[in-house]
Image (cartoon, rainbow, N blue to C red; front, side, top):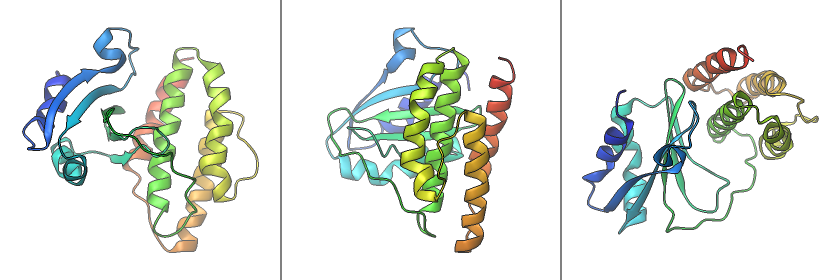
Amino acid sequence: MDDWVAVATGLLAGHPAVTTVEFAGSRSRGTHDQLSDWDFAVETSDFDALARDLPALVAPLDPLGQQWEPMGHFPVYQVFLRGPTKIEYLFLEQSQDPMPPLEPSRETLAAINTHFWDWIWWLTTKAAIGRGDLVAAHLPQLHAQLLRPMGIVAVPASIEAAVAVFVTRRDALEEEFGVSVDRALENEVRDGIDRVLGER
């Protein structure tokens, strides 16, 4: 994709509840890294209506996954694409309370899976620029929010270890609940991890 700015803004610009869509974040400031997200600040006259329509609006991108960031203090709609590439729509005028950890179930396992691969890819992008301090700080948070509720006792020591224990436990929960979680986002992120961390 040659111009994510034009594409990402264009998908939302025609919606009647959208007031403005502006390029934001580190890429807009020129302070980004190669793997940085593409951020867009959205102002809306009807947040609920726009939020309801967002999955249909971004469907032309053929997302591998999408979610509302569950832990932020304002709503962020995240769209995961091949690359891996992530587009984030930031609703800075809104507020939200961070969500508590999800208890694994038939209904929540897919959301847990998406959140894990989003978070682990973010950690990988930080490891790629030498921010081992951020990785070390976030692994206990990842464990508290996602892994411990799944029944994983120990905090993983590395990104690779987190992937290994998550996949093993996720697969066991799939069998227990009789569900199957889509692997498209996982496959893209794992390929990215192998590529990025294999170059260290």
